[in-house]
Image (cartoon, rainbow, N blue to C red):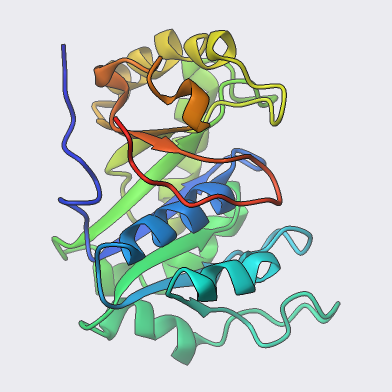
Length: 235
């Protein structure tokens, strides 16, 4: 049985969440940033989503502030004006050594283009993790072949290779242990075919203990979608 290291204690200084549209990148990024903030003095969540104007990290700005997470986002987020994060603000996530940064990247290859401008700056660094978020029940990502295509498209657009997988399989409030368990075979296949470790599985607290160790540490999420709970890493 594979037991992966705890990404809270062996975290990269910069962790980037990417993946297919609707896979739950923002939910995972927000909860992971809040979990890090419980252990570290200076954590920032950087919104680099240039694709989705409807569900942004700014939606939970108060929750993040209350958890001690600095939100780095466009000043026009949620105003109806689509002006994205200025480059000088985004640069803090990469260059400020005092920050542990979590980055929410937009969906698919379109969203990954935002990362491309920083690729040369981060490609040779050893403190950056690019994580592929997978929800096995989303359309177009229900098999390993489709996910491989998405992975390759994101890497080609962002010019940075993935370093790990995040199992964020859920059906929102309807999620059951059986639904989460239905993703395990796919994630194991991905782990082998892509040669990427499963870094974490995000689930509600009542499901966490049903997740096997080879799915990575189980992070408790109170609920999915636009409501957030703090991950406490019970595993």
